[in-house]
Image 1: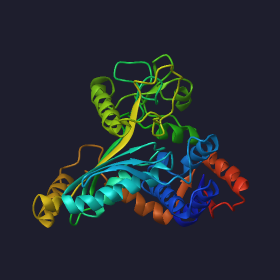
Image 2: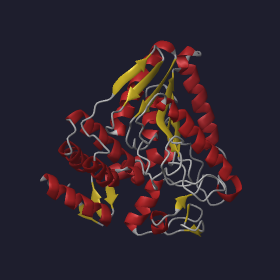
Image 3: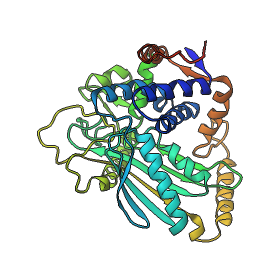
Image 4: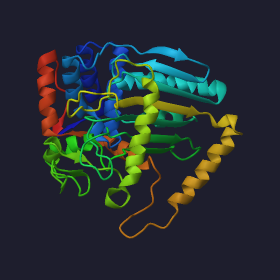
Amino acid sequence: MYICKPEPLEAFIEEIVIGLGADEEIATEVAQHLVHANLSGHDSHGVLRIAQYTAQADSGELVPAAQPTILRESSTTALIDARRGFGHYSTAYALNWAMKHAHEHGIAAAAVRHSSHIGRVGEYTERAAQSGLIAIVTVGSAGRGVGGLVPFGGRQRFFGANPWSMGVPAREQSPMVYDGSSATVAEGKVRFARAKGAPLPPGCIQDSEGKPTTDPEDFYDGGALLPLGGEVAGHKGYGLAMASALIGGLSMIGDEDHTLIGASVVEEVDDTSDQIAGVFLMVIDPAFFGDAEHYRAMVDETLTAAKNVEPAEGFDEVLIPGEPEVNTRRGRSQKGIAIPDATWEDFEALAERFGLSLPAHHME
C-alpha cells in the first residue's frame, strides 16, 4: 500500500486532468473533489476514479474542457447543460447557482443534463450546509441496459447506484450530512474492494445467476448490486432508486441526445425510450422560514441529544450523519491517504503518459 499526503496527491491528479485537456479551474475542482472524498473515507469516489475518467476522455464519452451552460432559467430554477464535461465541475456550478438564488428567494433548484460521473454527492450538500443552507442532491439513471442495480425482486440490471444526499447546517456541531446510495453499496465500493483484493460484506451483490456472493469479480462478470434494505426492506432502496432517476429526469425533458450521467450501460438495447437520467439539486435558506440562528441552535440541540443516546452493545457512541467523514478527515489529513497497488499502477501509467512525477509517498 502506498501512502500519500493530500497536497502532492491533489497536485498530481490536477496535472492529469489538465493533461486530458481541462483548464486549471476545472482541474482544480476535480482534483480537490477526488482527494476530499479519500480524506472523508470514501475511497470508492476518490482518486482511483482518475483511470476511469481518462478512459472516458479517450473514448469521447467525457469532454474534459467542456464548460456548463444555462439552457433555461427563472428566479428559482435552472436547467444546466454539462456538455459531457466533468460532473464534479458542472454540479458545483449548479450548486453555486442554486445557493446564490436561494439566498435571494429562499429556495432554488437546478437540473443538470449531459453530465458525467459527479463523484461523492455528500460533497455538495456539505458545502451548502457549511454556508448555512439546507441542500438536497441526487443523481439517478434507469432503464433497460442501465447501471448495475437490480429492482427489488428482479435479476436484470436497471438502475445506477442513484445516491441521495441531504445537508443541514448546525451552529456548534458539524453539519448533518446524509449521503447514501440506493444500493446496499455503490459500484465504487465494489471497484475499491476489487482493487484491494478483498471480499465484500454479505448482501451487497449477486452473481450472474442471481445468487448471493461476496466476490467483487462476480459483479463484473454479469452480476448486480442489490437494493438498500436487502431481503427484508429492499423495496425501500428500490423506491429511492426510482425516485432519483425520475426526478433527475427533469433534466431530460426535450433532450433528443441524452446521456446516462456516468452510469455503465451493460447491454445494448434497440429502444432507449425507457432510459431516464439526470442530476437534480435543491437549496433552501432557513432564514426565509424564521430566524436562521435559532434554527441552527435547534439543529444543534437535536444532534446533541442524538449523540447522547446510550450506545448499543458493540458501539462506542452514536454518531450523527456526516460525523464519520469529519473524524476520518482529521486522521487522514495527518497520516495520509492509502492508495492500493492496483490504483498505483494506474498512476504509474498516467505519469508516464503525461510526463509527470509520481506524488511523494511512502510504503506501508
